View: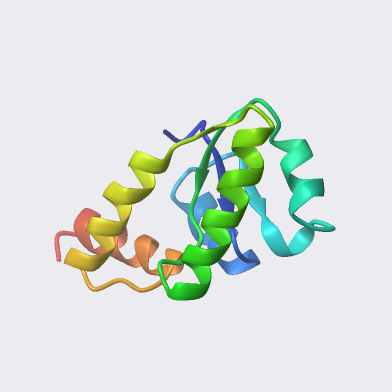
Length: 108
């Protein structure tokens, strides 16, 4: 999973995932728009990890449609599973994922 192309909303999300070992993290606010970013992810496997708040869900839906049209494989099922993990652990943001894993690895 850490070799998967992951799309996040911001620099802090990118930093959190890179600290967890993810290598291919793309940041939405660094690109010139959805289509510019979509071109970079054309025909690749992508996990969209925008936040699970209403705005993040809207962004994920919009970028999913664009990527699918560009023959990318969007890992929607993995996003749904992660959403359940977030809800169960009361995490609201991608940054919170790092805190969850550091607690589990530190035995808390």
